[in-house]
Amino acid sequence: MKKIVLAEDNSMLSMLLKFRLEKEGYLLLIAENGKETIELIEEHNPELILTDIMMPFVSGLEVISHVRNKLKNQTPIIVFSASGQEEIVLKAFKLGATDFMSKPFSPNELVNRVKKILR
Amino acid sequence: MFKNNYFIDFFENSPIIMQLVWVFIVMIIFFIMTTIAYLKYLRSFLRKNENLKNKIEKEFETAVINYLYAGNEIDEVSFEQKSIIDQFKSNTSEPFKRDILISTLLKLNYEISGEMAESIHKLYIQTGLLDYSLSKLKSRKWNSIADGIRELTLFHVKEVQDQVKIHINHPKTEVRIAMQLYLINLFHFDGLDFLNNITTPISEWDQIQLLEALQLNSNQRVTSINLWLKSTNNSVVFFALKLAKIYNQYGVRDELIALLDHQNIKIRIDVIHLLSYLNIIDAKIILKNKFNELTLEEQIAFFEMMENLYEIKDKPFILEHILNPNFEIKFSALKILKNLNIEEFNCFKNLTLEPEFVRMVKYIEAN
Image (tube, rainbow over all chains, first blue to last red):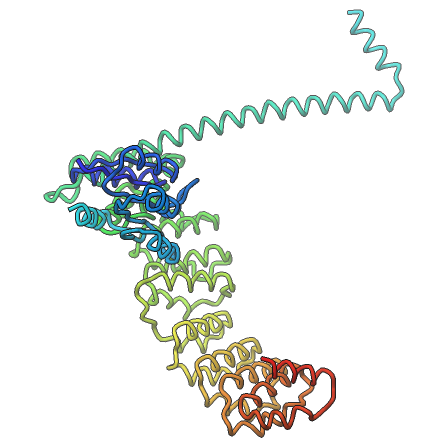
């Protein structure tokens, strides 16, 4: 079962995506902040990382930087951003993000992108 | 007993000022004790409330997620969904639980789009929350009305626009901006038709909020702004000028030129800046011909326009103003002259030895 780490501080969105992605056969590991995300990534070495850009303690950008520069890991990373965060998204791509989705997004579209990346 | 008598005797034999001080001390102690007891009660009440709120919120979150995944392709509303709706309906009669349910739905509504977002909007209607929002529109309290309109906006309830539009000229600005944002968020540029009927002012801050809401929409097809430029409500004219600038409305050239004779000086100045931004040369000729009739602020705005739209044939006019008593006009005239013809600028730069003029020339030469 392919493992996905989801870093999202909105508990409801996390729950919704967990139901949806587990239905598709993935194992979802949920973190509520950047610090927990890094711990989960180091412990489980997931096949995909989904991260919100704005998170408490450690931001999504720092998570990407940690994965790419410290862990030297090429795990695909999909970034969630809100509208008006275009510049931060560009920074995320510079740091090594694979793809991004602007909130509000369709969970079905996310599933399609996840499937495409993990094919 | 002996002790009590001692204190009573001591109190009765004390001077009146001492007695008053003792009474005051006892009152203060009583007040502090009561306050401490009340604050302790309040803290435990709020904690209990918070815990209850968190518990209900978790239950509602799970129920909403179950509702979203309980649909089937055969029925519009599945049996499981129906039971979740009934459970929510029984909870919405209590204002405390109703508010939690609304905030739970909104928590997800902000984050997702597509079919699931539509399902949340349906759930809002099916649980009867829509009726509560609509009832708020009839409330006597302005904050309830604004609250109701905001809920209708967030859940994209387009069908009730007539009930919302009733508040177009509500005395409270908070209600008006809620109504305006409802129309723009749900109907985009078509929602701006409220500008035809609004008689109350739209503050600068509210205008910024409306423009931001317009720019967040993917549909950027601007409707005609001609009517609003002719509005008797000055704030509508200011807003239309902002729209003309942001969306490069060259088509309203004639209306803008007509506004050069508007009775409000701030509008006239904004129009001069806008005409300059849109590079409408005809306006420059009109303003140049009536330059002496303009107020000083308009003359300064006109020279800012000239810096952008100068032509070689403007040279005589510019030369007339290089010794204008106003600093801004003189400075603009010298800058334009330098750009038009550097040799003539060099000839005229020694026209006077006035220190301000000399400093100005030196600055322009260096930049």
